[in-house]
Image (cartoon, rainbow, N blue to C red; front, top):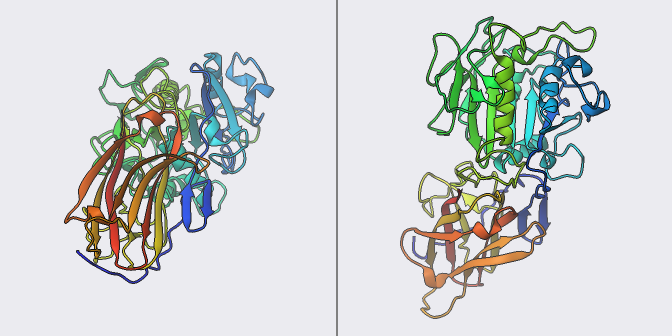
Length: 482
């Protein structure tokens, strides 16, 4: 709307993600890049900080934490490590291509602890029984978005092993639907509130799928011994795929094992903890040997999925945020702003559904300036570009309207910049002004391929003079890599 004016907006933007810094009026999201690591070593972190040992559960690879090698540095059989997941852990360790650790405290991303997610390629959540904190959910989702692998293992509804009112179905659904990174069904599935007593779900026919036909064997069936399934929503994420289905189900319902992607990362879901239980562990637990169940191929499914999540033998996955391989993906979270004040860091009221300026699509957009008074508005998001990507195409749609009448002086400006994790400007991609005012939106595009292998911050800064408004309206952003 030409010459529109508005009162100062009063919405408050949440500081999404870890590593937020505030300098004056500018808000900036930054994340520590992943350290370099040997290409042949896949780093896997098993979570044990959310009641994974409550009740009869014993979902650990070893009682030695964080490093299972302290119990036995060269395990040859699963009994060399103590835990109901020791078969899984020992099988990976014996390949010589995996480094395993156990997290017993809060999950972080971009921190200094040895079990910080930035040090790993894959995170395994084996039937968590306490809710993740807001900070933990931000850490997990950012880890996946930036290239990490996430293995979520649920159990049936009502499996509240520590009697805190929450079970794995509720906890994992909460992770996906109530986080600051992307709560708009980011993985393309929701976990069903079911208790399926028994069954042998069958694998689909797909000879090229690396989870079903991987280096650890061929998957034909899995096992349900009180478990659940997921409902797939490919309209929300076209990458979601059911691999193993409950008898009588197919398509978008009854998926017992499913995979998906998010940003540069990968996701796997399993609807029961019984298949990963090897029947041995700490005394006092009643365990069930689903790992070696002769009617299923659970070991191959668990191990192939771990390899896929870590990126073994494929052209993508793994990396923990800045990996050395590249999966074609769109990396920006909440890229159309329809989730409101999430993922992006912005000045108050920038992300808005105000009808005074129309969004290009949907209801929300980012509206910088437009007050007719001296104002600086900012909008930023941190993103890690995998080093294996040769294409990194940034695009966004921009609409500029102004009450200025000059045809020669840029009184109000919008800078689009790339910053490093310390806040130093690496490049100013473009500067727009009141002289760019026009009806409708125009798509702007830039290459960020030179920043492959780095975590950078994309930042918009709008500066308006003391009189006559100029509005810079941004919508439908994207950072497509391949």
